[in-house]
Amino acid sequence: MVNVFIANTDNAWFDFLSSETNLTEVNFWRPGETAFHAVQPGEILAFRLKSPRNKIGGFGIFSSHTKLPIQTAWEVFGRANGVSSLEALRNAIAQFRTSVTLPSTDIGATILVEPVFFPAHLWFDLPASWSPSIQRGKRYSTDTIEGSHLWNRLLETAQMSSITTAPGFAEEQARFGSPTLITPRLGQGAFRILVTEAYGRQCAITDGKVLPALDAAHIKPYGEGGLHAKSNGILLRKDIHSVFDAGYATIGEDFKFSVSNKVKEVFNNGEEYLRLHGKGLRLPDRKTDWPDVDLLRWHKANRYLG
Image (cartoon, rainbow, N blue to C red; front, side, top):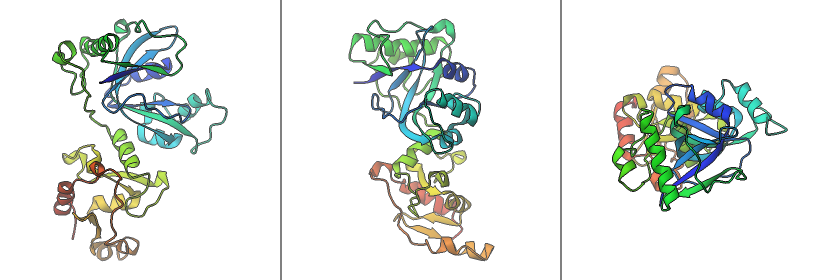
């Protein structure tokens, strides 16, 4: 069973993002921290534009949901939050909350990848079972006629608008095949959030929990063919991330942290890193989220200074 969730969508957020170009991901944020379990990764969240429009205007592929401090949300997603600046984000949230304090106020962040914003002439009507009293949204199963029609209409409208869509949006599936989960192509922001959550918001080496000081490090850089995938990511303190990227440190197949003596030779310093040599990595709870051993071998062979 695959689901589509129709979510009430702020018109200003939609209009701002529909005018942006080359968006690979967006933060469909909410002013509160309410959990969101209506869909799973690879399912669709459709944008129901609020009154007076009352139409479906596009969709995105659900990647993950978490809570983020406002400042972190801005640092990770920038204009993909649907606003032009951090102050504009604060002001937008303040319309719904009485107290908004930078940088500590948390918001609910629903991360959508490969968003599609239909031009106005392709917006279409809501399903017959939709009620104006719905507050957040409604889930539709593609096992039902209504849900299957909604799924197909979204994909067909995306094709009509000549928008390049995600893997799985083939015309054959839209017209003839059964709906299936879509493998989302993650952007940098979605990658960072997924890696951060996989490691429990703690540095894999030092166990540090100060979120603004943490980075999702690529084992194999994206620019050199590495993917935005959890198996290609490790959550590290920002300075350790820099040392790792520069080749002064690596992580072995045994998931132990290795620091090159060159950090001392070159900088006549580095004791704060050398004392971490040999420390075991704090691994995610799910083994599927662990670093890919082949990528660790790549880093040691192609980056590590030894």
